[in-house]
Amino acid sequence: MYTASFAFFEALWEAGVTHCFVNLGSDHPSILEAIVKGKRERPHIFPELLTCPNEMVALSAAHGMAQVTGKPQAVIVHVDVGTQGLGAAVHNASCSRVPVLIFAGLSPFTQEGEMRGSRTEFSHYVQDVPDQKAIVAQYCRYSGEIKTGKNIKQMVNRALSFAMSDPKGPVYLTAAREVLEEEIEPYSLNQAVWDPIGPTALTEDAVSRISQSLLSAENPLVITGYVGRSKDAVQELITLADSVPGLRVLDTLGSDMCFPANHRSSLGLMYGPHEKISTADVILVIDCDVPWIPALCKPSPRAAVYHIDIDPLKQQMPLFYIDADARYRADAYTALKQINSHTTVIKMDAATRDARIHVLDNEHKARMARLEQQAKPRDDGLLSCAHVMKVLRGAIPQDSVIILEAVTQTVTVVDQMKFSLPKTMFNSGAGGLGWFGGAALGAKLALGNGAPNSGPFVVAIVGDGTFLFSVPASVYWISRRYKIPFLTIVLNNDGWNAPLRSAKLVHPDGLSTHATHEELNISFNPSPDYAGIAVAAGGGEIWGGKVEKVEQLTGVLEQAIGVVKGGMSAVVEVVIV
Image 1 (cartoon, rainbow, N blue to C red):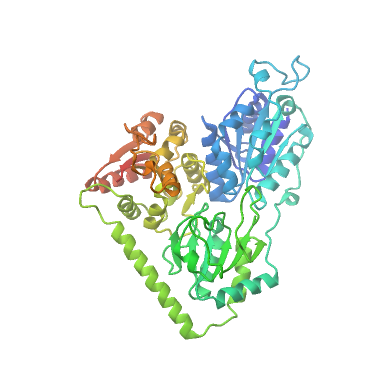
Image 2: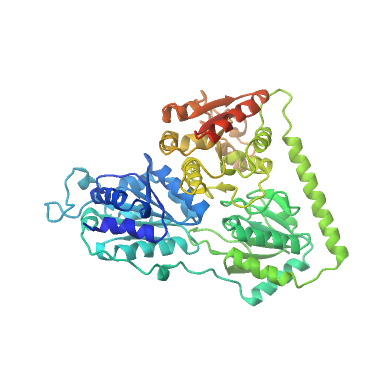
């Protein structure tokens, strides 16, 4: 029997989707039949399915895998409640422009047995909502309902065309049980005609204008956030920094490492304010959502500002604008390559070039020295985040991949880890906390080409609040079930410090500045046993440890790293000042 459900999975595989992260329900009888049929009849050309006890973890896993591979992955959830269970993960996938396909069933539209799949359970009545796709549609590049099995492959490919065309992002499809049960004739599509929209380029005039402006500037600055989604774009940005003496690069951390920390032009990571923004005379904003926050910092009125982005209008943000002299819709890699082709033919006198390079070298050396000073162990033996990251950087393999969701500690983590290779650090690119757990699972699985315990070493660096948001019981159960090992470092700084930081920005001398964490309701005291939560979720097959003093750190990290290399996940809680 060849049903619409089986054709759905076939369409996913033919379109390049290799994994489905699933949380199944009463709307999926035909889906279950198709899964069994696919596993038995064509196990090597059928998507791999992973059971995820929580929907947000499922979508975060698909998100992490899509980030690493650049290919879309799929999530299957049940009706309206399963869609709601995706929660903040939909926001993350949308903001970080990650291609994922979300499929959810609908309540049956018949109730007296008129068709196979007609209503058979109480839930089919209460879960029949007026507009299910409205739950997530505003975050999706496309949402639609499959109304017949006869064009189900076309609907899947249409959705994926949106997911994979810039600005990439999540797409959402639904279908009722009667449609999924429909028997159809087997068919296939010409996949070549379903390719995503190709990258856009700058006009020749734009290339000339931007190149001339950068080369004539005394203090040129590039601000980026998402260039790191493409390795090639990162290399082009490095080439630009080498070609334009005096150019500085500020990374605002969209979703990937955008510029190497060991390059003289690197200003490191900062989002919102930075002193170089106000002193730059030419600023190129490229693939960046928030280059600066005007209430905290903004460019000089005399600065020339150029904005290049795949979505320069930020169409999903009701309020967004920057005072740019010119805006261009273009792919970052393509645009940078064009600009580099132009800058290489414009020569600068040697004395000016050498002087500017000398200034950058000195600035970079001074910044590295400050970071080394910050990472020194404290005299009282307690742990600082900077010291923990320095020790961790030296302990893990050089090709490790970091999944980062450390919130208020993010800048310190990035500064001390000194990322210098593309695709070695990933961030959610958004504000839906709890992303890291699923993302680490998906990334590790992708890095091992589907073989669970292979590929680069994966480390998740997270805050204590973020850890609790991640539904750790689901995360570490999946890790054990599918043998997907990764190391988690939980930075315990006693609760949610982000709300306090926000309050201080608005009320620098307010009551909250001097209030206790308990008064502000942001404390996690008494502290949960973070590692113990993971160990319990994994049925004892997750390793847990805790560090409170400098003298304990190296030994515990070495033990945890050894455990992960041996094929089992480990969680280390680190109490920091």
